[in-house]
Figure 1 (cartoon, rainbow, N blue to C red):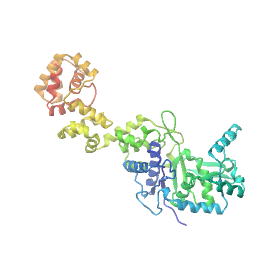
Figure 2: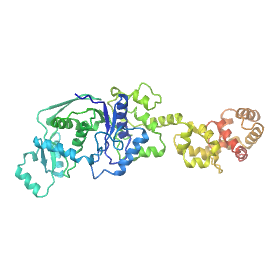
Figure 3: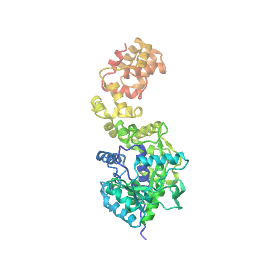
Length: 469
């Protein structure tokens, strides 16, 4: 008997940009594979021709690579189970449709969408769970042929056996039990001839030797159907685990329609990939430590036993925390590149390293770096209302003494402060805030000593003090 190496997969449909829920699913599967020295596979489920787009495929590949979720088998990488685009696997599915047809486990269905909606409404009104009533299962061969001859395109339904209990051990939720009588015959091939998700997904997982599947709990109801299909085809099923969904601030599950939470949007704003990974790895999964982790540490601490059961709530404050951690751990060179061209145009190259060190703890995104670049290096002084108030309160005499102290001590911050305190008698907030307001136009921000050093190099300290006299 062949012993399969642990293999997980991520199988997105290219119908939109990846959002945080998609990425967490990919991440958990990648971490499970890494933790067990297994294989992480990427398959594209693009059989929905009306909604699938090549640009979405290109985007999701780019997003996954940017995040460092590197698959070792699948599209763009290759492997022994090609092709990895479901749109190129029609002959594979046709073969298994014929197997089910030969065993008389499927039948054509001519029910329209409108008829199915009316049937569901009637069942719900009667207090019964909605399921297909088997209308077309009772159709004679002559009736079927007549409808085919008239040009109607049927779906293909799988015959669900009566009176069976379907059991499986969920990797997250433990033992799950379903009754086949509650399921109803379900579609496995659409009227246009393309495979339904349930069918292609289950068949491909077996043929590609996937052993473990972590996916959203919205797929839980699909699992008993897929188990029935695989059993009928004589194919083994992977171990399924169903993750609680990520919900937004409105309590609704995240979706591709929420563009603000797409990976591309978050990346464009300036989030670091490591910030997203550290955040998502803890969203519905617990670690023994809340400290920053690199990829190997995240994988080493990942366990299916640590996966939660309750919905995971998106928390922007937590995401911002991990963004701050990413900035704290990033190299000076990387942060300088991340800050972008607008910052490069303002900050002299010789002061690039000093600028990054100075503002590192006060920025979260490139736009924040640009804010401080403008405050420190722009020839046009920009002052907030609060800083102007601080300057007015300190008075002209204070800044005259500050200029004299600077002329005497230069950029030696501690000596300058001591001298200014001696000259003015000002202490604490009354001493530091007017200086900060004069130097930066703000009443908060980076360490004042470093700001003084940077401004001293650009010879603008005197100009800014003079403007307050």
